[in-house]
Image (cartoon, rainbow, N blue to C red; front, side, top):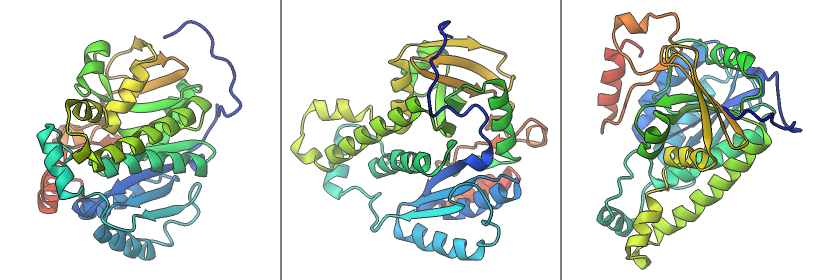
Length: 318
């Protein structure tokens, strides 16, 4: 960690509470059943965060509209913007067929983070920061809340009140930062606090994503290797890690089983990485019942909803 003291910032919140945060997630039709499982556990966890959802296609939009009506009472009295639903007008997550061909030619795989998802990821974070006084927690739909995430985040902030980002550890991706740091940041469960450096970062990366989105949709006119090189840096997790890495990070490594496994300074951004016992993808009764476990993060890159739900039921969470 850098030894020099950080200057005070007018937007710094040293004692934020969960009621001052909101939680943001984006879904498409492939995660509708998972959304029902995720929201059931989120509401049952006791979290007081307001919920912000972006739906990326018409099926997801209709489902979330119906879900909101059925859960209106349980959504009352939560954090900023108790519930907010942004529905894209069309199925914008689908790339035009010609661009899909060009993407394949360049060896790019958009199955996990299609360009429109990446754009809406940064737009959703920007909107969430604007709507709250404390910040926004991004959650993938496969970040399953076994316990109240507010309590975990509050404990981290009591220990590191000046932190800007609280994130989940990723072991291998992106490889550039994993080789440099010995780990990487997984954006699947990350609290973006409303501080000047975070707001600046999110707006800068949103603008970059919107630029790359236009690039993807016009790849037919960019039939060269430079387009491939630019697009390789498009994914939200890669972009965030590289943004921090470029600022020069100094890390203090704790025990990986500690609540904060790594704590670091990346330029003017301070980062706390949550330890494995609290947020992880380990299965089995010996793990699912552990008192430390707050978030279960399985990999749900299966092609069908049935396969996703079969995995979650097998883990005993849905």
